[in-house]
Amino acid sequence: MKNVDYSNQIQKEAILNEFKGNLFEFLVAQGLARKSSVEHQFLLDLPADFKERLSSYEEMIRTHEPRLLVKLPTLAGVTVQKIWEEISSASPFNQWHVIGKMVATNDNDLWNETDIVGTYLTEEGVPKKLALSLKLTKDHSFVNTKSAGVKSFLAKYFSLFGALSARFQNELNQEVDESFLMMGHRLYTIADLEWTGAFDKRWSEHYTELPGELSGEMRTIVHENYYRVALKLRSHLQDLQKENPALFFDSLFALCGFGHEDIIQVNCFHQDYELKTISIKRFADLFEIKDKKCTILPIKDLSSSVDIRIGKVVLQVRVKPMNKFTTAAYKINCSIKVKE
Image 1 (tube, rainbow, N blue to C red):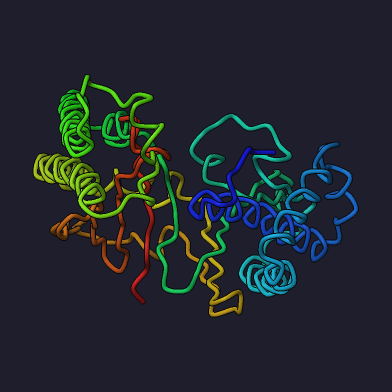
Image 2 (cartoon, rainbow, N blue to C red):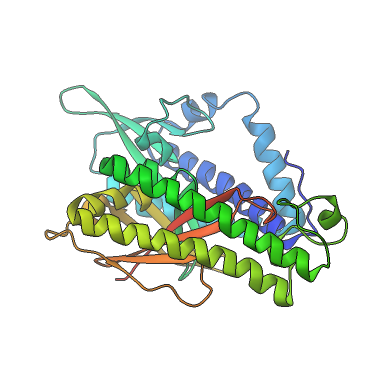
């Protein structure tokens, strides 16, 4: 079990989101196995410690968000029915698994984005897998699709540009380091301390290391730091797009959660855990744009997000601290919203 400070609202929300996501995945997979008449095998295939983990998830949610525990099975049930209506025309499924918790994988793009996988036989008797990406999300929110370290983001996800993306990655890393030093110097100046190039005990003993707990001028300084990094990131994304628009367009698929075209994205949207809608999207539903055009939108003042409009999809690329803002270990969270 993770060591979490439940008095810290940000940490509490993050861990509860993880636990409810794990429970939701299990309930949906179990429901699909029941629909396929293989629930008994599904339960037998669970790892030895999985029931213990489920119990710990349930206990934590019961303690901190008891209403959710009542609503989760209902949300899972309607999601199962919606998925079944979409996939029941396939051959009968003989197996269901929750990826990452029950099955060893080859760590490729398909399994990295898969939460639930079903196995069935084609008419020719060949085993085939159906991969589902499953999310439980607040209504009207962006759906998280990818998280990566800022210091490898361009090199990894725009690797098709070769040396150019590597050069831009180095320049982005330099901006991260320089902006971090500028932020630290300004914060230490306000605190009437000497900045030596790193946050030390003098800071942690008297000030918070969590960005959400800052206030006033200090909060603005931290926001300006992420804003500078986001501006640099946007500039490099624009340059990559100018270099090769089609290649840039294709590089966005993985950031949108479609590193593999066979993924099916299932999103259950709720408001206070009351069902609003269930969205099921395949690659072709979102990205069959013949001219491969997309628009990188301007950054709003002090925002740390770069928004890219791709047809009816808005991809949000956001610079965030890993947790504490006192280290230069930032991450980039990607999420999407579909404009119907």
